[in-house]
Length: 204
Length: 229
Ligand SMILES: Cc1cc2nc3c(=O)[nH]c(=O)nc-3n(C[C@@H](O)[C@@H](O)[C@H](O)COP(=O)(O)O)c2cc1C
Ligand SMILES: Cc1cc2nc3c(=O)[nH]c(=O)nc-3n(C[C@H](O)[C@H](O)[C@H](O)COP(=O)(O)O)c2cc1C
Image (tube, rainbow over all chains, first blue to last red):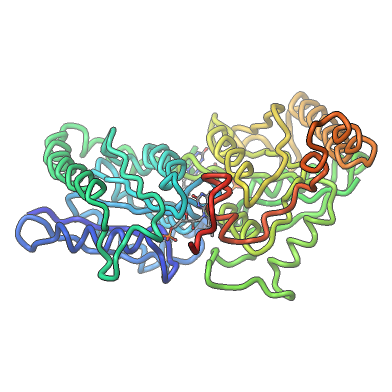
């Protein structure tokens, strides 16, 4: 059984990225091999690097869920050629006192209204997830870019284009394998965690 | 010359704030610098409208009225601080004060990199059509090891760093004047006259007013139809 956390990088009520993740959840969550839970970001306050190093209870809850999960799927919109502040804000909280993303398998997806499918936001997100305090294992060479997202779903919230569906199935099948492979890369996990726990930007 | 400085960190004690305050105090003979704080703005919410008396609208007007902008960015997880990104989202959706505005990017961080990666992201963000700033090319100012860089009075200790900063700021001033000249009647007419299509050459570079266009079609496929189709 694979336990996956889904994060929508937007709090917009009509977000097509939420539609995308809900669709992924419906399509692959079967209660037997795969369980997908979506966690919302809207309760997280603005990250202000509190000197007392206390993080809000919501951040701790999300952190614990990611820590316990086998993998994370993120769906992001593109805002100004980059990652929405909501998501980078969440990632700042999730790398301040706890480090749930260290060596965690992550699959990146994204949707945009236009024809580019959030390509630039996804490229930035890969760089961000590779920074030392996040240190995630982002699945390589499998971009899932959903273009023209306002037209991509039917009334039941399902992706209508068959080629897109086939591709999503393949990417997800890869992610199932990638989570197994990542789980075998144990040799550094403990060390990576220790390293990052003892590391603090404030102690430099 | 009147410039706006944007403090890109939401931290109570911020080295980027020290940096901008230092510039405002030390180089007052070059320009006047008014500071804006991103920490006072809420996180971007696409469903909220920017009302006339909101702080976002006030910031927008202040930026519009300025000759240029200096943004000091922190670096969090190899990108710009979320508070700064959020502010730029507010200022590129309902309102577009950065349109054709000369912007200089600077930043300071705790370690050797001095916000190198955040600054590259910021330059790409400023290029997006909803923002549409004219970013000052080259002249990187990365202040590394922030905790050692300032003395107790929050002044930059290293003399060579100060000189380098001053040289960059002087260049930026020239750049601002150059960009202002682009709007000169004469220059516009010259270009229009030389061009085969005077109409397009003369057409003002309009700010992206339609949210949907800013968001989408202009970004992606320049000549395509509206989002609502
Ligand atoms: C502030 C702002 C900036 C945007 N910038 C971009 C952009 O650079 N590229 C793009 O494709 N869409 C941009 N958009 C439109 C996106 O909202 C849209 O393409 C998005 O990816 C759809 O995701 P959602 O349905 O989950 O909100 C922008 C929207 C906002 C509110
Ligand atoms: C969650 C988190 C992530 C950080 N990531 C970086 C980073 O990637 N690079 C860096 O130089 N400093 C990083 N820092 C340290 C400082 O916040 C950063 O150097 C910042 O630019 C300091 O500017 P300020 O004092 O104006 O907030 C990070 C701090 C935190 C709390």
